[in-house]
Image (cartoon, rainbow, N blue to C red):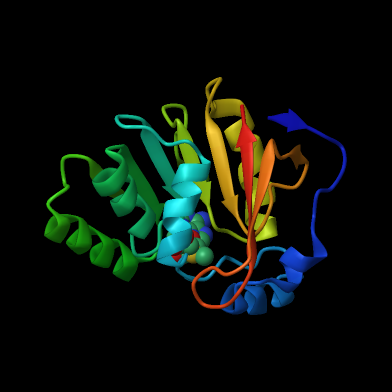
Length: 186
Ligand SMILES: C[S@@+](CC[C@H](N)C(=O)[O-])C[C@H]1O[C@@H](n2cnc3c(N)ncnc32)[C@H](O)[C@@H]1O
């Protein structure tokens, strides 16, 4: 991914297409506002993983994994080895239950912890659906750790300061909302 000086921030993103997260985005002027749990709609989950070019046996890392849906689809439908990190205990329990019910414990797991304290160096694809301030803080960690060829797919909120390789505008995310996906390649 190419690091640029420019701030690739889209006003549309801040005002948000995903209604719930955009409410948080508005109050996010409070720079340290943590991203709330707002699940990515299922059709977008699949689109994010396809957009990131996730392949069988590749390693997927979802930073802030919520109910585990990205981790589960990555393992179950894409044949990836997948890991999520989530700091909300209830969501960790829920996502681990869902992984168990899907019978994919060998390929998918959830770390209970802070996404800023993880090792992303094995990742082939990292997915993020976070707020701009969180993306800003995560960016230097990814720059230090990601291997060549790794991809980052950002849902609706870009990684400011990186120039996306490609963007994908989704007119209807399944709930009548539009959103943009951003793909970055290391
Ligand atoms: C917008 S939700 C996205 C959930 C999931 N990735 C998806 O796309 O459906 C963001 C998630 O990040 C989690 N999160 C926010 N800050 C975090 C942090 N510092 N460490 C771990 N998880 C965090 C929140 O609890 C929430 O579940």
